[in-house]
Length: 232
Image 1 (cartoon, one colour):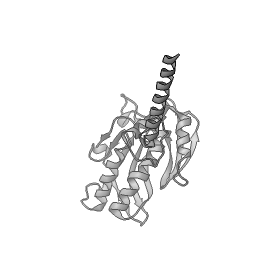
Image 2 (cartoon, helix red, strand yellow; image 1 turned 90 degrees about the vertical axis):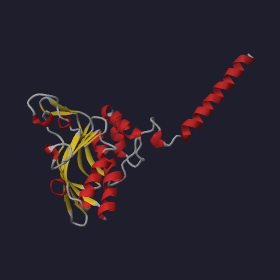
Image 3 (cartoon, one colour; image 1 turned 135 degrees about the horizontal axis):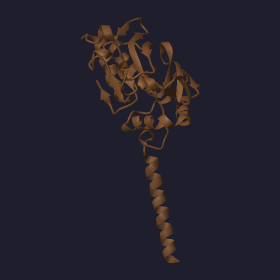
Image 4 (cartoon, one colour; image 1 turned 90 degrees about the horizontal axis):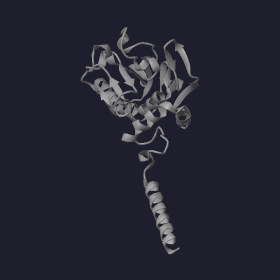
């Protein structure tokens, strides 16, 4: 009887110690706490984003928690717009804290990654370097049922599953336009902003490709969800 009592006391002490330890973990470092767009970025952020790829309800619940005006979107049913390229766990993004030249389909974690990137990396870079916020983003699309680089053979592009967004230009609230094709090699503030915009994206997306990667990306950033921090 005494031995059982000791075991129960030890179990209670261990449970209390674990509860205190777990409650002391900051929420953005806790693997079991749902992601929030304003959480400080940690190595767990991308892991949490990846985990939502196959969790439609979990991902949509995170999107619903985005502060008002932070993301305008419509959940879409799973469907196959083009034979061979089914789309699952997707939303249509109409806008975020910025306007877009057109709405686009995005797998839910891509929409979430963009929202975090915009709030925590893109806008702070624009304000710090250019003294103005980004008001509008010009993109080249997210979904295209094709192989990588449009080749006849090979693996499907991230665009075939709406897991990548190609961004060509940023329009500022003060009327200025920053375009990759024109300003990437510029040594002034527009070029510096674009380099910070790329580098900041690497903290969230699996792969970020731009003009330094190859000629095919001379006019845009490719923000993709696959991979492990390829940043070029």
